[in-house]
Length: 509
Image (cartoon, rainbow, N blue to C red):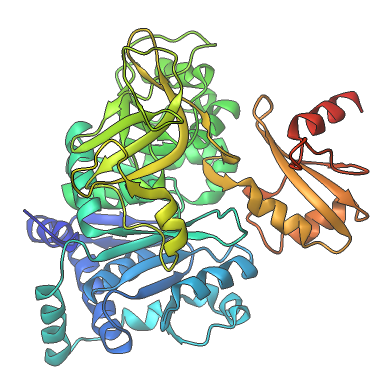
């Protein structure tokens, strides 16, 4: 039994040292090169920081970013990708939570990094990859490895926080190993596959790309983000790079069909399409299935807090346009169940009874980094078990069983939403709007029918000003697509903002 994800890399490098492990638009590493680069980076990091501490990696996704991740693991640390496209203020909040001593950047992100006000040591990946480890450094890496545990943290991914401060989910080696072993076996991912990475490296879909590749000895092709605005070059890239496996957000698959990519070209090697992040519209799924009738299509579900996914449904039948895909069944070694408002178990023989989706198993993560309060709220003792410690994650998602006993996703329990493949706390957007000078009160509502965020606000600024200010603080996918100015916020009898009244007022305006 392996206890460190580096064993994936080491075993694949031993078996196929000269095979391409990862490639981006401009660069590529063989398995041996990736392993050597991890050792170069790790040799420096172990002198500059302590084990089980954060290594922020401030750069766009690339081969070099992956080398930085593996180097952090070599040094016994955990990595956290910080996307330079994110607003400075958001990155600063994440850095404050991490409390890191060092940061890895690249030449391209160097100027932007200067605006972060980071007080620790900044290391450039280009220089790290030129380092030649000496005997003392290699010995220290061996000692770190000997003392490592499978419960040591591997990475952190920050999700939207309801208080305006992002929450850093912290994930250990064992959770990743437990999930990836099941994931690759279930979907028959092998050394013959070429995985086309669509997801950003600060989004947990990329965890499946990275570690499925390293575990099986496959190849990962990093697809440039810009191609998702131009279907013809995207189709060419997938075809030229001989991509077989797409582990993509639903929104990315829908871009291909919306922009009629298949009218231009059908990439010839695709045989697996695994999607998540939102409910897959049947209309778009049908186009993909008609284009690839022999391919496996899989709907997977799960929040970042349970290491990628906890359920899967292999599409095995036709669906009408007004139907929803089932969530399917739990991955091996995970337990997925529904609890009602009184923490009673909802079983498959109770159709159409809605309850909160809860998850237990090894893949449940360590919680939120440096945030005990939020961790204790979501990672709790199983209320069905008072005999021994059993931590479960309460997803805040609602689900139900159909009359056929299939599990379906219903909606968010609170105002946390899924939009454009990202999980968003609407409260974080409210906080940002409230911070705009002249804004008195804000309330964002997700219009599910039209798939957009609407920002209601009370105050004097115009919509252009608010948008301009939000772009300094929030990623683009969190900026409301519509703003509605109100004279005053309607409230319910208990003093809370009346969201139904806001939407009704907008309709009647």
